[in-house]
Image 1 (spheres, one colour):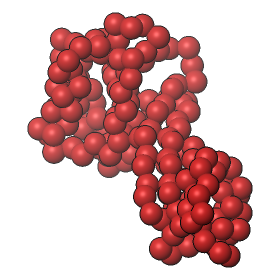
Image 2 (cartoon, one colour; image 1 turned 90 degrees about the vertical axis):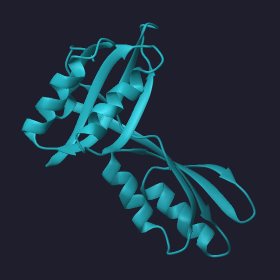
Image 3 (cartoon, one colour; image 1 turned 180 degrees about the horizontal axis):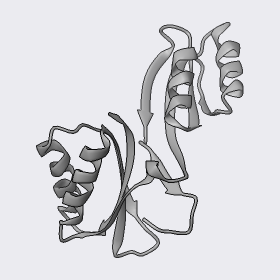
Length: 162
């Protein structure tokens, strides 16, 4: 079992997302993250699914997704040369001496402080999943008030699409 990033180009219509997600659920595969948005073609949406599965499981689920009427193309991005990013916003306590420490951590991780209040910061961090996890682990104990993450977005470096 290894981490996979699967992309699905599908018709931009109601119910298509749930049918793809249902395939994962029916086979007992967990979806770790899921992002969906329209593409450069307004008729198509692009799903990016992060999951954990073996080579044979991944191949099987790709074949089954491709059988859905709404699906135009699927791809396991992780078998190619690709770029991935995720966005996270974290609201943290920032009081007294902790303010300078959190500011320093944000600088080290190339994060941006996007909101400042008397007792908290909201910090935006982008990068690979491991970078975001490392940022969270580096924050002082009890500093995290709230976290939201977008899920992975990925593109292959070559000219092929989906």
